[in-house]
Length: 89
Image 1 (cartoon, rainbow, N blue to C red):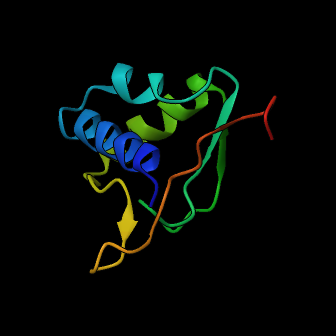
Image 2: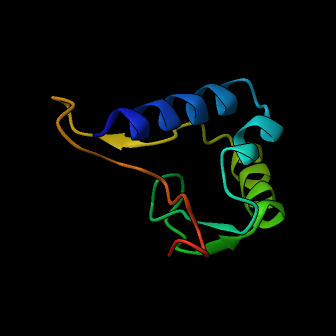
């Protein structure tokens, strides 16, 4: 994983561990999207925009899910939970 992806995931994980949704949502572009892709749930749905991402995180945390990313045991590769801007897609 790149250093930037590692920093993003660490920030995201820290925010979720603190249940700081403002900090977690701020890591996404205002018009960004997040597709779970089984990081938290088996529901492959896309949240578009910070309000939708926040709503999905609220439901996820309310269900007691706390993980933020998947990474191989040796740390050689992992999955970034979708973070992109429509303008750069």
